[in-house]
Length: 444
Length: 139
Image 1 (tube, each protein chain N blue to C red):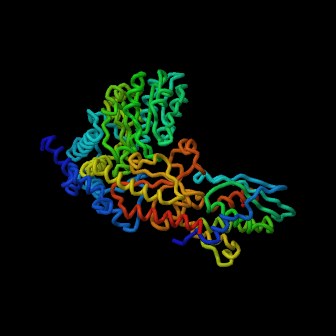
Image 2: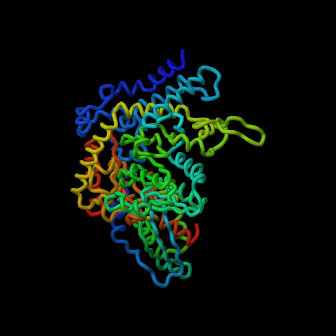
Image 3: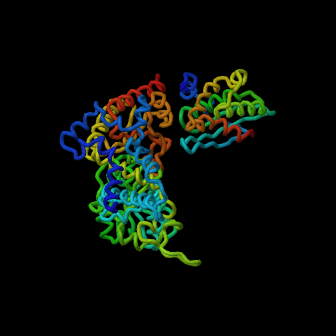
């Protein structure tokens, strides 16, 4: 079998289940979008075994980790049953196939985010590791004492602490962009914070608390004018919106698979080719070398240079299946359905005088995420009482303590319901009813 | 799952008899629960080995506030030694160990928090007052 025929075979297998499940929706038509926005119907839930196994569960925590479709679970299993061997170092056919499965997955990831070359897709364990590669391996090559790194106050800790550390190591200053009352970073704020000292601007694409999408294109244009670099944390954007790293003008883009209906333990870092090539490695060890002597070593080309140690080949294969699944449903369809769900949920919440929504009053700015508080009731009590009705939400600081401090919310905590396209109207109704129970529990 | 938000818990949360800033305390200690952002200062007035007065200030979730109020109610008037024993019983219970009926009776209303052991994320809330007490009087 020729290499390309083999590739095609693996590719077909990886995506067969997902593609078959939604063949009719391979490219979203206006009709598909209308159907998707009909939240009273739910043709998606059946794709997710966990949701089928827990018919009474109302899962509203997809921003923490999404559920996985059968296509992803099947791919993971199929890798071990049909392709399992250690990738990269194999001289026999099975290992070559495992290697090819990784490379095909890399190509699918590249296409998914509009990366021009699959070689610039570094496969990591999670978005945090991806961002740490940039902060630990790239930042020291450009930061000098007195320089500035600019981030937003709405960063997840994974795009915040690495920059605290990088700034401390370089003697640079960490500068914050603050949004207005609707969660929007205004041009005036950009004028005030992005200047000649800004060497790196690292920004969350979609906030995991406010749900707002940041103007990354505009931010990129501004930082590039100053000779700096744009890093984008796409952990919360990739499950909801089309991403094109070139259109954004990103220099680095990070995301994780588990929020994208893929396996745990898989992350992606894309970087511009010349930057990745010029950077030193992050982790060192097996698989990332060209040659090794007693006292020295040279590095493998990108991306292997950043992929020390044995890769989770099955996880990578399953990540490709997750992307295939998302593409088969269609991000337009996903976005339309999530918007309809968020709109309905926020309309219903507005009827509860004791609920305060955090962030923009415009549902279209929330990307599946609705953070809120219930008057006088601690978010952990809210979550515990909702749990009795099998409604699963997140409550706490959402790995964004500086944001909650800045927002001034009581107890530095809030509730968060995060909706995915596999949710439906019944799920929202259960949340609203549950919130009524929360209120009555405390107020008779 | 048993509802931990019982009438007694809600009453202690809404009207905590022991939530005030005590004057003339002999001992005090600050307890925090970083996962919830709960903060509490527990003050005791111990005379001749007896806890004459126990009171707390601070803020937190209903479980932490009510549990601390139940604790203060239970140990007021008890010897330090007995308070230590009750504290040990409570900690055992919320960690999921079974108590005898007599032991549950000794914990009075606080025994209603037994099922919190099935909610690991909330055990720290229920423990806060008791843990702060044990940091003053020892285990």
